[in-house]
Amino acid sequence: MLDAYVIEEIKRREAERQKQDRARPVLEIPVSPEADEDDRKSERDDGSRPGEVVQIEL
Image (cartoon, rainbow, N blue to C red; front, side, top):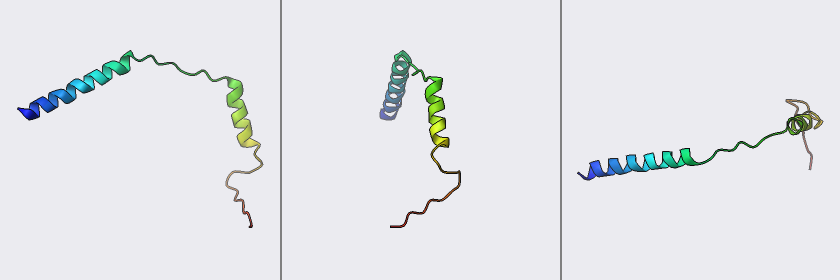
């Protein structure tokens, strides 16, 4: 009897959680093409080449 109660309680809570998730509004953050281009430009212009190792002597 207790096992059935626990299983039903878990199902009820999961259904409640899914209902809350569906009710929650989803809003995507707009990203300007300029910002994306600036990010890619900074990655290319950092002065290093892919696969290059930098050694710093102390």
